Length: 141
Image: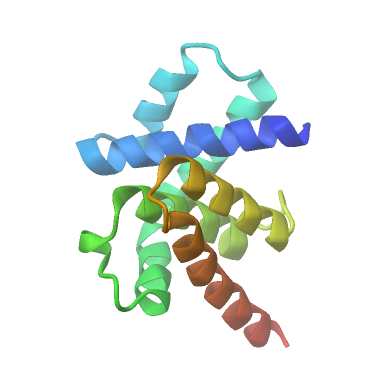
């Protein structure tokens, strides 16, 4: 799958996670409704579904990681865009590294945060993910 397709898949997954977070609807249903508009090729849609399913399945673990690495920003008070981007990226970085190298997953998350979040979202997401990656690298040595 082309890099651009992966980026579009990540954006679709992020949008579904964000909408689900705000609406309380299941993220898979939100994604399926978005994918029903036919914006992604089947392979890209499949990747987006896998991302959303993985985040949904591992959400408690992911939220614990976010809480550990962004202790000054409780999840309930964190900007929904930042929270959704972090959930997606941490899933890719810690639980599903078969699709993208660490640097790619982090860079993609930062770009999504910059595009959809506040002026400081990119820096915040980069800082949290950098901390997560450093800890993960230390644990594998």
